[in-house]
Amino acid sequence: MKKVLKFGLWLLFLLIVVSAVYIIIHWVPDRSVDDLKAKWAQPPSQFISVAGMGVHLRDEGPRNDKTPIVLLHGTSASLHTWDGWVDALKGERRVIRFDLPGFGLTGPDTKNDYTIENYAHTIMAVLDHLQVERSMIVGNSLGGHIAWFTALLNPSRFDGLVLVDATGYPFKPESVPIGFMIARIPLLNQLMENVLPRSIVESSVKNVYANPDLVSEELVSRYFDLTTRVGNRKALAFRLKQMKPGTHAHRIKELKLPTLIMWGEHDRLIPPEIGDLFHQDIVGSQLVRFEHLGHVPQEEDPAATVAVFKQFLTQFE
Image (cartoon, rainbow, N blue to C red):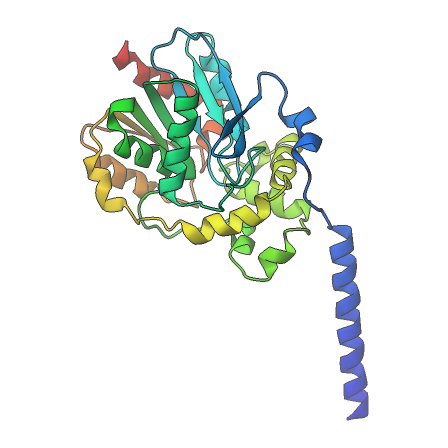
């Protein structure tokens, strides 16, 4: 009996030591915006004051564009996810993109309010700040949810809507990025506010790509660095707790503006069937699926996806 007890104590001691070493190795405290600006807020980045936040924003292209294009990213992403699209569009169109509250260099909402209503309010506050009266709104994943809900509440302000693997209906994911799972687990998500193995970020990014070989070290570094922005890890836990997919799904049928729906066939987070639901409920909408892409098609293959978007734009010329 004593030998068993002694062995158990040694195992406990070993577990404590291994856990301590793991925490020390992967101890990554929050980083200030100033520390991250040099790499991730190069020109034309700017910061504007909206709702008490310093919103990280890029506003590019001709200012005489009467209908600017507004691009909204998804959970744990940033305005950089649209780099490829912006390069293809800014020569002829004004393109506005920014880090949503809780993500990127914008960081946490001042009241930790991550409801869809507050996100919609923030979008309109940014557009009002920029004196943009009408625009085309585009969103991926969470950004898609925010895009359609904002357009629903403010129909006179938007000429068109583009949903890229968007949320809105209840859904059952085939696979969830490990970072999202950890953010939902009490105590563990608190630990992750200071401990963040790079491998978790890499695995999470690869999870949303159809071809994980396309996930470069530079891409992982971007997601990793911006996740460590002061307050972002805590904000993610709040965001996942406060927003439930499907809360306003019954209102999607109210959308009347021209709508393009784009979906990656290999999206394992939000099934392609959700795209079918959007297509059914939004009268006159267009649906395009990409056989070789996953949950972030605009990032995984900017050229193929922006080409479809440009074709959609021709109806407004």
